[in-house]
Length: 246
Ligand SMILES: Nc1ncnc2c1ncn2[C@@H]1O[C@H](COP(=O)(O)OP(=O)(O)OP(=O)(O)O)[C@@H](O)[C@H]1O
Ligand SMILES: [Mg+2]
Image (cartoon, rainbow, N blue to C red; front, side, top):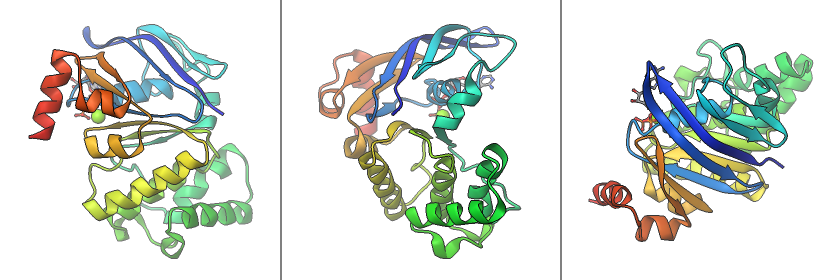
């Protein structure tokens, strides 16, 4: 079980504040969806949690592992990345590797799994996202939805207890979105903690236990999907949602 606690996270790019004192918690088994306008800092926030982006102030706790501002290093990011899977916005699959090889790579490198074992595990994970029959395909031979599901299978390869997803449905057509949503609901049912970033209110309504609205680097709303999406309290939240629902 994984609990993520982000406390007073501040991040600047070239002196320009992008995250300003963000506080956010994902309890064990909870699904939190972060909504917000483009440039709000959503991707930066996720990247900080898995140690892909150093930050200036604050702390990130993932169970007992901690990330703090440090010019030198990643702190406990390697431990965190073994428990927390990360799905990138643009899939980030290795183009010269087949679907199953994309999924098998981390277990081979990080866990030292043998080729047979890694293949079997990759096939099982591809089965979980409904893609066993496409295991031999290269990324350029897969549809957008299939690529997204390979990326999910890959993120599951180290048996994470939490998944972070960055806009994982935004590039997909409605039916493919639905396939990804079903996969997320299944993972949620298995007890994974999910932290998802999206522009899509529909996704938030479907999967979120709690919705956080991030605007201009700050949390401006937080609550149940209904509270936040139907009755936003802040002016910024009202503006953002009004524009989305037009
Ligand atoms: N590596 C970087 N160097 C400089 N500025 C950056 C870098 N990465 C992001 N930014 C800036 O930080 C701000 C937040 O970016 P971020 O990608 O976190 O936004 P976002 O909320 O994910 O937006 P979108 O919804 O468009 O994906 C933006 O103004 C962006 O231009
Ligand atoms: Mg982004």
